[in-house]
Length: 59
Image 1: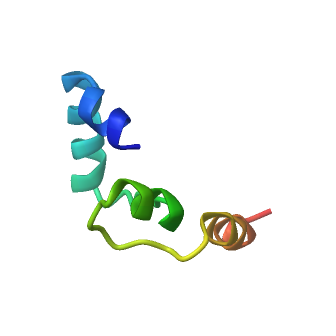
Image 2: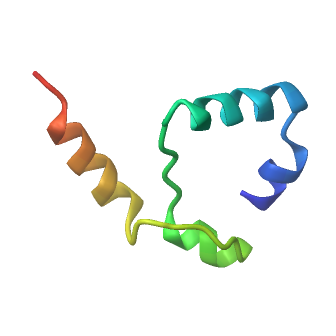
Image 3: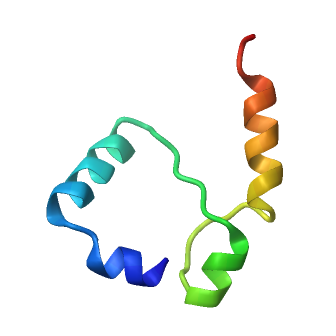
């Protein structure tokens, strides 16, 4: 993850920043955050969060 953040292209970074400004939420696995020592709000288990979010989608 850290490598990805360091090597991300300027255009991709701009796109992520624009999405963030529009209120898009980005979720990152707690394990990845710990390994790369990133200080952000995290969910305890990414897969659990994804399943819960998918269950909220209209069918």
